[in-house]
Length: 415
Ligand code: SF4
Image 1: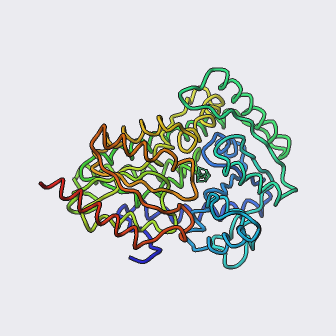
Image 2: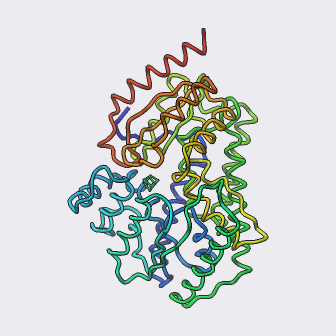
Image 3: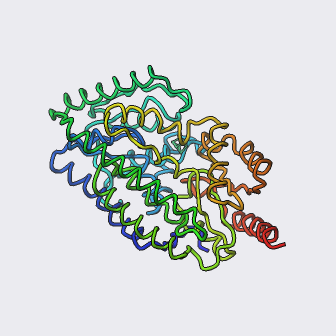
């Protein structure tokens, strides 16, 4: 296997994703040219629905990083960030975006025209520290942009109280007032209700698609997880719903007909932590030994349903939940989520990506591994890598550990 490899896709609908990705970024540049206000923001919060409802253009710098990794732009971006004094130990998303915005952002070598410069920056008041710092770096680079500093409490999902929700609702109204003021647009609340309804529909479809992965053999693997692109960038649009409906139809058909990712599925695997965006092909590596990655930590992030009868409250709750569901979550809660997924998806073994530049999601992995072994008898292996920086990944080490782990799993499954 090459050091940097593309994943092998089995779903024909997932192959359509390339067009959807290209369309999103081209649309952003087109919007900029036409004078539509462009706002850069963190992913996974209720601002996206507000933007689409108001006819504004959202851009997600964090999501641009996997695109940079896929197109091989990261080495140059990292070099620029490191020359500015950003340590190699910092989050790869942060370093990549910093290098990107201080480099030749829209140069000829940049695919899809690059990102349109922001007129608005929504600065996060929650999430992990690097997520917040990405936005602060943007503020310095684009001093003419209008800044909205969100102030959301960071509360564990299990401890969200009514007063947190009331405060988040006020923040949503403050955001809408701010956007009306700086763009001269108005909010059509009927339109917002429709956008939230469509957004919730996407969550429902997402859950259904994921549930078919419980079938043995599983109809699709983590190699196709790029489909989450529509959940990050297109929630609240028909583009997401139409695409996910097609994916669901195909996945359902495959599951019902017993068509798996590989002909002879022997080992079902769980992946903890973010994928290696520069090397999605490693998800196919297990297949030669009958292994398929059928579930992962990341996919739970999009399972949150929205109360369509109360759109603003729904978006406030979504904003409170998003980061605490993925990165800012207690070790106890993560343990509970991983164990539940491993039970439901009939997992034989788990792969823990010890992610050098994402401390929040890596922290606590030893506790979770111990609990998996003790409570469910599921063994695991640790892979040292990085979600963005391939200098922190050794393919030889990966293959050695995975080969030994798979042999052990195969031996124990066929006594
Ligand atoms: S959760 Fe991890 S990957 Fe995401 S911004 Fe924070 S440090 Fe980076």
